[in-house]
Length: 215
Image 1 (cartoon, rainbow, N blue to C red):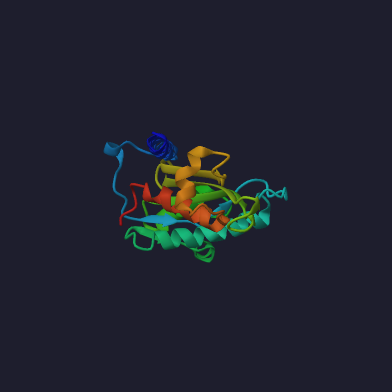
Image 2 (cartoon, rainbow, N blue to C red):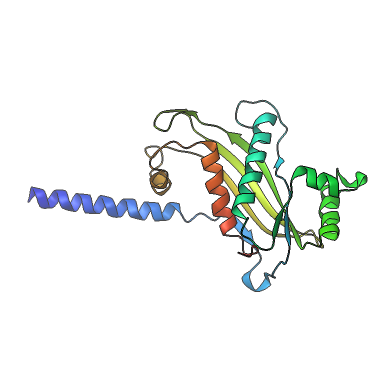
């Protein structure tokens, strides 16, 4: 009887963890027009990521150096994720600089409009990084976990309407502090990840849900 009771307990626990992990994956983090309103885009230009915030050195991953480092990593990661998308062109900062007229560099709306006319693109993807904090510790022991926050917007060059957007804001949590993080913890091998790992997976998940990228 004792063995049967132990088996039932294990089965119930596994069922609970499975249910909780499925719940943790149901968060909605992106938006787009309704399916019937989504029109195909023949050309999407990806701009270099921008550093958001006031650049104050607060030690929380929001200082200028951290944000610039995060923006650079995001640029490389988006380029890699979208390399097989036939309607996507990723621009570097120097390429944007060379394409812009002198009077348009400080106005984001003008940048979008000018690139739309010059490159004959339908939409421009803009990414803003708000937090990029590296973990302090190792895979197995941590003093401070990796933390990141960014926003992606796909903007129509003609109307300036946001066709699609996605947000990411996560500070890695231990399984003990949040049982709902079981699914993520399992996918990460129950280890503390670097901020690069955190952001790369976040970008991959978000861009996979963008209906305008042609793969």
